[in-house]
Length: 302
Image (tube, rainbow, N blue to C red; front, side, top):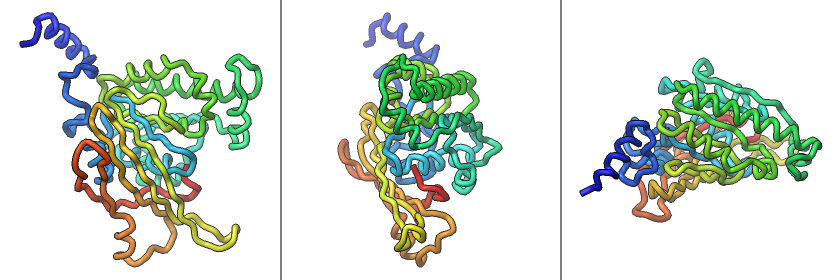
């Protein structure tokens, strides 16, 4: 029998929607109303239904690992089911035509645009150190700070089914300069809401206790023999799903194809895009399969 004081405390936390850290609380992601499906059956099987709402999750990977491709699919899935989605685009990298090709309903998307910087600037700025330095790296710090403030306002405003903060191109040195309380504030802002909150980052940073980490590894596919004739036709994205609290640990392979590229025969194409979630621990393999070709590759996926 539970101690009366403990029962009273748990009741007060639940009344204020602060019960996510209780071990007696229902695990995040259990139940359709608590998750935001990606509409890729294999990935959703690994996520136990989809991205958990009211939690801070991460999509992690290096450049060309498929981060943007997966983000576009998630935003498209959210807008298709009638949710309002928001993306804070820190360095103004979102390609609208690719988003439309992925199926995003732009009239249901809030796009908060940052300031574009070149890749050479990113490398140069990221190589410098010193949070108080007046050098050019201060520009990246300001852009990240503005993006974080905008994202916090989005989470506080409510009304969104999904919200994403794109820090994929942020230098690791700049991210390392951020105080840890930055991520705790985001976790606190999204806790108890209906928002599926996602960070797009180069390395794991801030997953909340009930969130998930999707660690990506991409392999691009090209056609053409010369530099001028080579074209990107697709990529295979392997997503490892990690969430200790939800006891999920496994991988799924997603095949993304570029639009406007002649496809193979239907039977051959289907064999390329069908895959399944594979558990690497905590139980038998899931049987969820999918045949989704996602995203667009009008430009090289990040």
